[in-house]
Amino acid sequence: ATPTALMVGTGRGAQIGVVIKGPEVLEQTRQVTTIVLDKTGTITEGRMAVSALVPAEGVSEDELLRLAAAAEDASEHPIARAVAGEGRDRLGRLPAVESFTARAGLGVEAVVDGHAVVVGRPSFLADWAIPLPDPVAREADRLEASGNTVVAVASDGRLAGLVAVADRVKPTSAGAIARLRDLGLTPILLTGDNERAARAVAEEVGIDRVLAGVLPQDKAAEIARLQQAGEVVAMVGDGVNDAPALARADLGLSIGTGTDVAIEASDLTLVSGDLNAAADAIRLSRRTLATIK
Ligand code: ADP
Ligand code: MG
Image 1 (cartoon, rainbow, N blue to C red):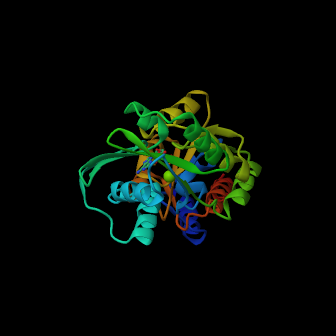
Image 2 (cartoon, rainbow, N blue to C red):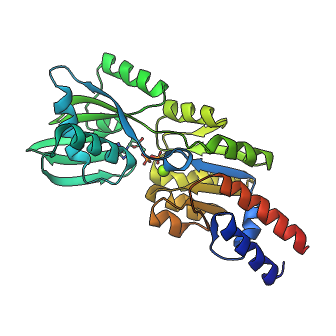
Image 3 (cartoon, helix red, strand yellow):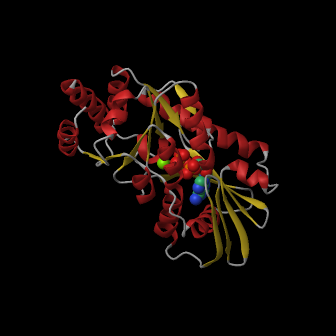
């Protein structure tokens, strides 16, 4: 392919809402066989809202929310934004926090009013030897099966309760994924979220293959495994935790409304975050390069 013809394709990219890092990217775009999509912020809006509060025995809803919201206040994670926002809306000012630590893909730790608070995925609390009693675990299962993400909250080593958050699938995602399939690509959902919530979203947008519960540092290894199986892999993601996978993929696509780290690690940016732009880019690259030959 001649550089000039590729530049024409790059210019067309801007018109369909994609920013392409360099002309050579179109060649990779054309060859993709599998497209791996992050869930939160990529297939979904990434604007979560609190959908349920399940306080443990002897704890009030407000107390549960106060601890969780204060601990999450300093975190940029979409779950944290939802929990802190709900706390401020319902309770006004949140208590000050000392020694905040974020654990990527797991949760947060902080000292709130002198109490050691942990908020995160239930398995993260299990690492702290804080298991969920059976009735609470059943409630968590029920909430996850209906598409919620459930985080557990503990204070001084005791369970304070569960907070469920839910996100909306982007109205354009299902249609775009159908188009990617029509282009012959296999879509795969890759997420750090739990299997049940991941399946609920996958079903809604027409994806059969789900890789759930994947820690941020393992996302790139999942891409490598697909490559070893002979696939040419595109990865679409928005978060800091997607950056290594975006870099590892044959073609990295970032969401324009996502984090700078993800955008820098990618080859191509979907400006508005509409996944249709990914299908448009693949069609464009095939047409551009067919014209040249
Ligand atoms: P995704 O791959 O969907 O973008 P992440 O890897 O960021 O998800 O997070 C995976 C899981 O880790 C979340 O579903 C949640 O259970 C937990 N988690 C991560 N960060 C936080 C946080 N700040 N507060 C509570 N839970 C969190
Ligand atoms: Mg994400």
